[in-house]
Image (spheres, helix red, strand yellow):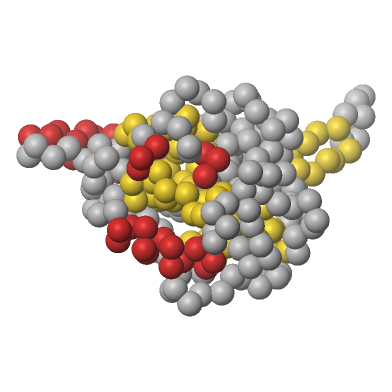
Length: 260
């Protein structure tokens, strides 16, 4: 993902007065965000991020699903290729393969709906099979949590391309932004509902979410506090629109308990 600080430097070259754009605010995630999940429409229409909550459930944005999706896990795992292959064959012979790539139908996708029955842009996905308990997950905040205050730093990341249809980075990218006040137009798509409590925004000069970053986790104090719902198309989004996990914390527990 091009979570990036784009700075324009005037280079006073000896013969050329060229202008160079440098991405200086993001980095390869390395040991971070090993819980990151890639969610793609089977028909190739859209790719998003997501976060693994436990061996059976992940969370993403609703617009990333709502049709058959391919889920890819362990993309940023620190397991070597040999270790992954060894684990797969071991689980296969036990008769319970812990696959890290699954096709998930709509019956296993759960979108939050408010009292007015209008959906919000947040979704839980139940996997077909449990994945290995060794795969890292992201921890949820307590049920009575509060969203991060304005000015607090939060961590974001993903595999998004700079523009729709563009080439995604080979490695997961991480960045840091700050909680900010949402503007009048900082909202989910029209088919989704939200309110002041559930909506969250972040802005830091040059740090942007791009095409393919929706659904990715927003970390605060090493806990999942948000899901990116920005849907930039041709350009990246400077103000990143998110949903506040604390508004959906009870629903998350209830949904997983009702669908064992």
